[in-house]
Image 1 (cartoon, rainbow, N blue to C red):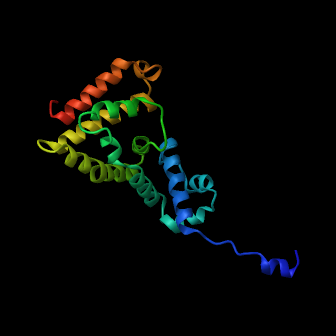
Image 2: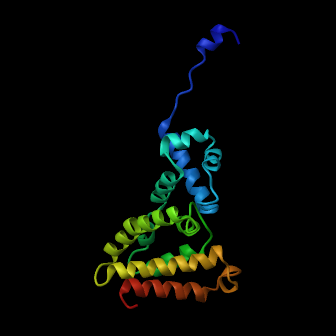
Image 3: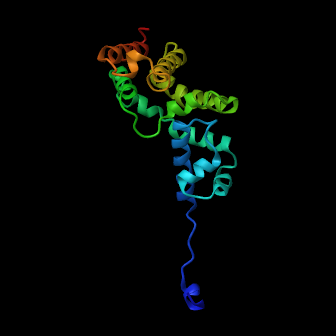
Length: 192
């Protein structure tokens, strides 16, 4: 290349929103598969195809990135998408099916080993998921019922995906999915 070619070459524009979105997506994927403790800023940067200094520039720290990733991954509307009368069946099918996309429950479960990430998870689940679910459920005991749903779902996922036990790891029986659906529906209906 001569001097003219260099001068005419267009400068590569930075696309901050796209870079930030790529970092966030890479973080959600890493935290949901490797966990907080096993994921480094370099891992996330490599997944996003960028220099690790950009992760720090946009998010400041691994903990701040974790908070942003989990906030982005938590979507209580997904739980309620099946409607009130089909809540149990909708959630049980989602939990018993194959993983699709980023798994916010896995991000939370795999963060337990780190005290800071655990505290962030607890705060965000309470402020984002439980509050929205409790408001949607309504009185009486809406907050307790929302917590019961989380307990049941998280326990099921732990044994389904992370600490597999024979009855639900090899071939999930329809009777187990039916039990989960009935249990969740009873909580929403106030029968539990």
